[in-house]
Image 1: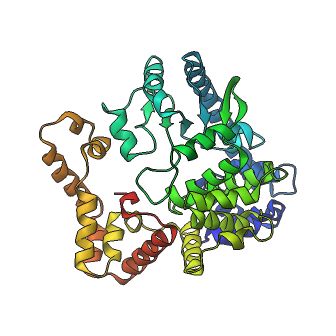
Image 2: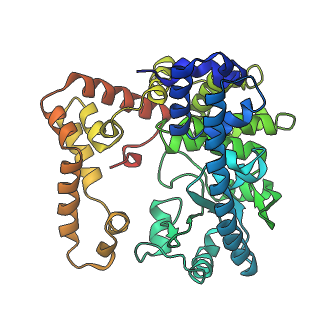
Length: 406
């Protein structure tokens, strides 16, 4: 099986794609589409000397994304206009920001939802404004409860349209990453004006944008993402190369307690896309211990996706050698709050029979991961090795067990 690492040189130098033969470029297109960078690769190689089949396959990927981009822009414009009419300040995040302000063409940045940062006091008004457009959450929720446990509200969906995530911060509360109210005020104070689909809004300052892209890949996704997230990091560095304040980036990474995640994302981006920070930046962010193993495992996960079970609570459970520690993981991940259960089972939000949903979730987890659970119980060496490497990476990053997927 051809893996992604076989084509690493092409993402560093897209012109090298012209040397591929038929089976190679067919494999490259499939991998690029799976990683969300096929349209980006088309843009980088357009006009180049490519095999006709490769050029056409990439062109078709770009055209599909261009059509999707037009549909997204229509809905995004409605969302931003409604919030502006309501007098709610908006700071666009992730794909919405990157497509409008960083990538040279919006079609180069695929996305499935619109991520917006609002001030916490504006969340209720924003939910009401979007409800007028038909956007609904899958269950009734209390904003205060959600903000205690999550960095964004439940997705608001429009049937046949986009999903919207309203964030009030950029890191999950209660974890080891630290972004207090002063840090949030700093994000808003440094934000700059940008026009997205004709609507004036704001976006993160370049340094904060780069940090957020790094966190999105290495912290929130725990290196389970795709090349698209690393392409984001690369494109931000290219777009703002002349103005990025690297000492500020380093300082905020340590202030927010996310330096390992930022180092990892920048290091992998340099290896894949050739965007190397100035001398001394990576060395200043590099943790003292465990870095080589963390990089090796993160690179392996990017090249060949591993079982979902390794990234889940089953994987954390398997990674602990002592049964006392395993029972601690079991207790923390099984006994959820009503708010957490409601995200999985909307009807649980108001049910008097909340214990039934704990039992239902336990049964669902056992069934979903039945193969992995059996492998854990019989001591499968491959799963145990992967789970322990993943747990070591999580610890190295500073992520908590509570941030692990179910």
